Amino acid sequence: MLIRLGATKSIASPSLRCHAPVRSIRNLPRFLRQPQNTQTPLSRSQKWTRRVAYAAALSATAVVTYNTYEPFRHTVLAADRIGRVVWAVSLGVVDYKRTFSKTYEDDEAMLNAYSTCHQRSAERLLIALQTNGGIFIKLGQHISSVNLLPWEWTSTMRPLQDQCFPTPMEAIEAMYIADTGRSIEEQFSYFDPEPIGVASLAQVHIAHDRETGKKVAVKLQHPHLEEFAEIDMKTATTCLAWVKAIFPEFEFTWLGEEMRKNLPLEMDFCNEAANAARAMNDFSGHLWTTLYIPEVFRVTKRTMVMEFIEGGRVDDLEYLNKYHIDRNAVSRELTKIFSEMVYINGFFHADPHAGNLLIRPAPPSSRSRYNFEIALLDHGLYFDIDDELRINYAHLWLSLIASPSAKTNADRRKYAQLVGNISPEMYPVFESAITGRANLKALEDAPDTTSLGFKRAGSLIDTLQQSEEELEAIRRALVQKDGLLPMLFALLRRMPRRVLMILKLNDLTRNLDNSLATTHPRSRIFLIIARYCALAVWLDERKAIFDEWRFTGPTWSSLGSYFSKWWSFHKLNDGIRLLEFAMDTQAQIVMMGAWLRGLWRRGFVGASRAAAGLEV
Image (tube, rainbow, N blue to C red):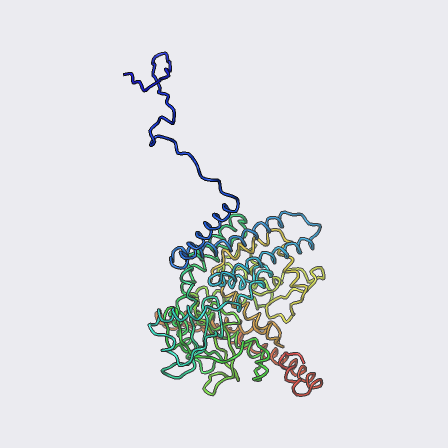
């Protein structure tokens, strides 16, 4: 069909001829005409005004959405927290890659470069953890307590044990009502809005209970923890997995796994109250003990009202001097408390830093033999230790205090394998982790020479003091000996978590003994641990014999075995007590010498301060 609209122009094709109409725009109907732009172009200032208006409208919308729409607010805050940690970890990874890939003139230059890199990376991560708070503070605390890590990392993270930021009172009040159904004002006649202590998961306020009139301590969880707990744990585990992917030998994924497993327990104050009650029951049969656990009055998942304990930090020498408390006795009693938890009860406090320990003058009703009590706080995380691991670890410790011999050397490696799955080549690193010393000398080793720069101890009760040369040798070994640092991380990865926590307890007792400036030899606290290990082994052996008698009755052979093991225990125990007496006498002589020097300088005030380990 051919349609003609006015003038047409034909378009030829081999097979088809069609005619396209040609028409002036002016002749087209109005609705078919192309609209023409008649607006005046915007000036530069008008363009900027429009952009500012758009930005302001977008910002206002974001602010309103942030304040009124919870999912959006949560997403923004979570992204900010993730980004902060990822950035710190990324910079650290790049820093380590550059530092480890360089060549150095000598070992000293390499040691300094590695140390500086450790310090830079630790400080970056510290800032990110402090800013995020909450669970990330807990992660930093875990890092600070693993003394197998480089010193720069543990010392940098140590402030996180005490430096945490409080939650505003408005948020605390809202959480208290949500959890208890009553307001703070209804519950307490007085409530101090300023917390006396702030930790990674909670803060503590002083209050007076309205019903009983008692002065109490109110422990309140930071409300924001639940909001970000899951995303924070995922961020932490992802970052640790990323580090492992880039540095396969530096594996810390176990740290994230431990947090994911244990953090829900620590965030449940009902679990904490149950742990405190069980620990209190474990020591209830003692006629004498310096341990005191505050009573819990009321508890919900995020709130706890408990007995208020007024005292000082266990390592506060000024406080000890004020109340005439013997710092040597404090160190010994701390070691006894934790040794009994581990080796006898098999149920122990797993977060035992100095901030969780208070010391106070013993009240009239106290069961303490001394003029002080040690209050143990924060029972959120405890570990059970099964009997087999507990007894094998006791055997290992007893082998470490034994004199060097072929049997001793074999026993040390045998029980290290049973306790921590430690291979022979990894044993020296494991031994240093337990003892804090360069690995102990075996009988077959060559005599000590000056080439080492220090003398190696033969056992843990060797009175040889740890020298600066020995500490420096341990530090240098981490960077000078091929494969030692990866072996250290492999040790952390394969060691049972319970054993790691026991090592943490050992580190606590060593560090507190050092900070208390005790006058007894370092090996004094090792003797206490050995005495409890000997008791644990004897009780286990006695139980096995009694169990046998229940089925077969006493036989001459079993009676002989019983008295043989009884004699071995008492021989070892009495020998340890004799050494303890000698060391305590030596400590008193040293303290008396300090007292006399202080008396000469500043009279009785100076004598008291000098005997307490303070400057005169």
